[in-house]
Length: 292
Image (cartoon, rainbow, N blue to C red; front, side, top):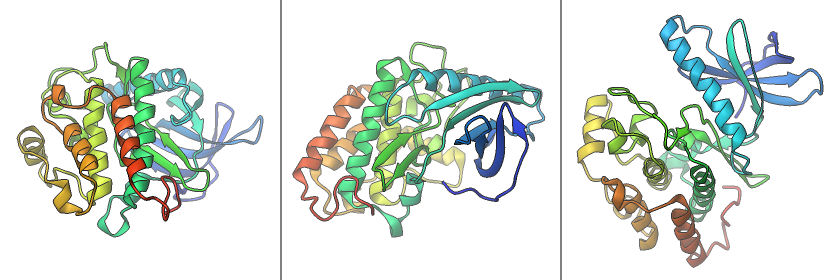
């Protein structure tokens, strides 16, 4: 995660903002320095360009939910929220500044990771999901850009719980689709409440993409993409990347099953299955967390 443009910014809540790391539809993230300690952190705040009051209120609610949810999840492979607050411009939250890069970097055919690396990383992600699910939290926006890997320290970090909700909560509203459509399970696109098995579908899409260099369903038309996710079977991963262990392609196929009941029962089950596959692969040249 490299800053885009170096620039000294204002002081907010005891943090001096500097380089911008990136931005999304509702938020932007900066490298910042905690004035009291000199520690560098990631500072996330609402985009100032959100003029619509309803959209801004919804984004503010998500910020508060992200801070509250992530603070409760104390796991080595889940990003840590260090502080949160509110000023005249809206809410903000402070997270640890993560070295490394997101898995999105490795979703293109020319930069695919060795399969043992993919399996090892995604087994860690599955364990982090299992921890969150065990505490009643569904991520709802799992995708390659929300997984950060630092090859030097061998750390894997699941980030961005801005859409996370309790599994027993009112996680959707009729006609409202939250998250990234290509990674959302068919039942979520149809308006069903988010569940852990929806996260498992997103895990399957991410695995597929890291192994094949493309998502199982792709279209420039949102309507066509939604139709594919709802109705069209995923392509045969073994044909797209020959030589993958049948056990691995079988795991991905189960994760991408249209009916939730046909997916694995839990993220722990997925992690164990991936770890079992990893043990069968000769990873002498590239261990599960070797630098690619």
